[in-house]
Structure formats: C-alpha cells, structure tokens
Length: 194
Image 1 (tube, rainbow, N blue to C red):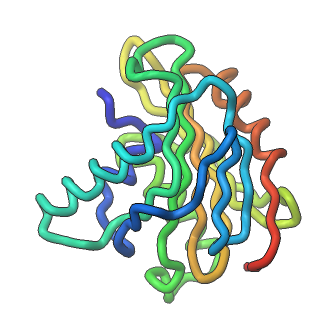
Image 2: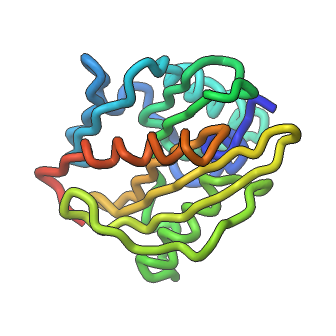
Image 3: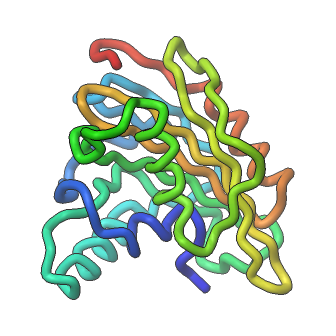
C-alpha cells in the first residue's frame, strides 16, 4: 500500500533516463534546480524522502536490469503512514522529452501524467492546459481506490530544457490535494525555457 499514485510511476514504470543523486537543492523549504531553471516552495511540515525514493528507483531498476528510470528530483510526505487521513505526498520528477519523439507536446505531457499516476489510478475528467508562472502545464486529475481510502492526485507536466518536468500531488482527500495545488503558486521559472 506504500506505493501510491505519484510514487507509482517512479518505482514501477522504469523508463527514461537514469536518476542522478544530486539534482536540485532543497534549502529552508525551497527546492531549486538550476538546470531546469525553477524554484518551488514546499508545503510546510512535509518530510524529505528524496534519497529513499531514489534508492527505491535504483533497486527496482537493478531488479529489472535497466538503468532507465524517471529522475526523482524531490519526494516529500507528511509521514510514513499513507493510510492516515491527513497524509500527503509531493513529488517532482523528470523524463526525457525525446523518448516521446512521435508525440506532440500536449500528447507527451498527457502520457507522462498517466505514467506518473500509475496503472491503478483512474483519470477524473479530461486533462487541461493551465498557465502557471509563465509556463504552460498539462494538468490531470486521478483517483485510486484503496479501501477504505480513496487517494486523489493532481499531476502537472511541462517541458523544460528537453525534459518533461512532472510535479505530482497526492493526498487521502480532495481537500488535501487541493491544499497542495495551492503551492504551485510558489513556482518560479527563470533561465531555461520550454
């Protein structure tokens, strides 16, 4: 049960390029990545589990005899008990845009959102384009039934510097995931573009 919507893609869909151990910097609640040119203020009270998520990806990739993975930039949760009513997860990952060479940008973003949600999640409504911090994001909403819980996820993707940048929020309530959505307003871009 620990592998939930946003993390499912990181750990179960082994594709893309290999994860680097030192992408981005988390300092004083602000995550920044110079290569992709963005800053994001994380929700308060979440615990950084990035190194554990990266290790999980490496372990899964080794078991499948591949070096191709999503690149985990950040993974933060409200705690280890993903069945707690107030449990929340924020993950930021990348995937090479060139791996979807036959798709236009919107189709590539929609596909990566599905992968990020995982095979057990169900889409809620159609994906939509939204503008945030001067960038265009494809946003998809998902639900996953894990009785007695229903997990909710909102997955945002955009293209930066030849990579699909995926920001996924997961919570055990719609209100919880909406509170995470509000943190997208802290996103700032500069330097590199789409």
